Amino acid sequence: MTERNAAFASTLVDALHRLGVDHACVSPGSRSTPLALAVADSPITDWSHHDERSSAFFALGVARATGRPVAVITTSGTAAAELHPALAEARAARVPLIAITADRPFELRDVGAAQTIDQRGLFGPTVKWSHDTGVPDPALVPYGHAASLAAHLVAEAGDPPAGPVHLNLRFREPLMGSVPPDATLVPEILRPRVRPDPAAVNRLADLVSGRRGLLIAGPDADPGTPGAATAAAAALGWPILADPLSGVRAGEHDLSRVLAASDALGWAGFLDRVSPEVVIRCGAIPTSKPVVHWLAEHPDVPQVIIDTAGWRDPGGSVSLVVRSDPGAALYSLAKAGPDPAGSDWWNRWAAADAAGAEALHSTIDAAGFPNEPAVVRTVEAALPSDTMLWVASSMPVRDLDAVMRPSPRRLRVMANRGANGIDGFVSTALGAAAAGGVPVVALAGDLSLIHDATALATASRLGIPLKVVVIDNDGGGIFHMLPQEGHRHFERLWGTPHGLDLARVAEAFGVEAEILDEAERLASSVASPNDRPRLILARTDRSANAALHRQIREAVAAALDGL
Image (cartoon, rainbow, N blue to C red):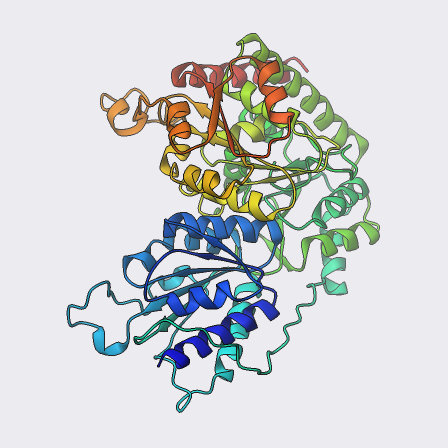
């Protein structure tokens, strides 16, 4: 039985590596021993984690940074269930993860055996594909089946839309042993890019030709999208509302039509003042709440979504879906030569964007440092070229959307905005820092740090040089922006002050920490290189932050009234 377990596991792992899986995250456990040993003896880089939940988010970060599938391996029981949050984010964000959970043999189910739960279909519709196996037995299934199974996992994880898959492997004791992989054929997987049909390009060009429109670039990891989006916008004479996670706001492509204050213009109602006649959207749902609401409330305006697969239309307002790689479709549209909108269309947007940005940043400056938008602006502006910024959900990503100006620096801005949770944020950024090949700075809220504080121990143990900037407002600041503010139970149920000294928390896990309350010192610390993990704290006030955001919206609206 030892040889059977080891041969199956080593053949599976070898095939995964030959199919492009270069990283695996492993947590300690007995039942997963054949898998852990197979990974340790393979060319795959293995990352050891104490916490399965953090391990899965770390794998998510590696997969996001590299664009390749990553395996995460657990033992049986509740250890397997800990993967669910990260798999949910991977499914919504279209990230290829391969969850491999070890399990007990069938005879140990429903008889009170320790560390045994029903792991069949454990993750339900959260995963794209799930498979449950019996214990390895070459008399029933040859070891070559393991290679085919590996190919099936990689194919399902990477096929559009990409996402997580689950393999549940049963092992019967004894579990120790090491056997070389079985020499077997591994299927090759080829994925050509999805290009638009010429008829679709002509249909799209006819729809937008000569019309006043907007190009909305949502979160997107494809490096081909920014140049294509700016080429299409130039040909059409349109502005680009670019999400900070789209890749369009920063880079060496043409930035002349990328708006600097699109979120502020949305809050000020500019989309209703100067309504477009047509909208093209690519990428995931934008971060900007007013833009998303405007799209949902205007199904009368033709809205085009360019996407390879899936259905990203929460407002039910789309009128045309073009199945294509967005970059290919937008380049094809630009080459089709549609008539541009009149110059007055772009001029009105450019004037409003300049006035809105001036009002926005002047109001932030007048509030003094540190305030939350100013901290976010300082961190982003200090990032050197060829840096990756991971930004937490909730307020940090929204503030980034508001304050990030177009920049020629080569920046990758990323976030867990598939399911939009704050859990696992530090672990995800750690994974990106471990495998991304560029410096990584993480911008977190205090609650997202606390939720994943044990990841700091992993950062210290593995020596991963992640820099984490934490906006510490002692609780849930975003809820001050919602109707819950002012309720008599607000602080207890939503504000949830923690009262912790987060610098001491970091130091307890072996991570150097400092508190910075001056913009120049913060910018210098963010820009400087580091070879060990580091935590930087900026302390702010939740109530003052809510008041500042109201002032910003009023100032931008007044600036637009003055045009």
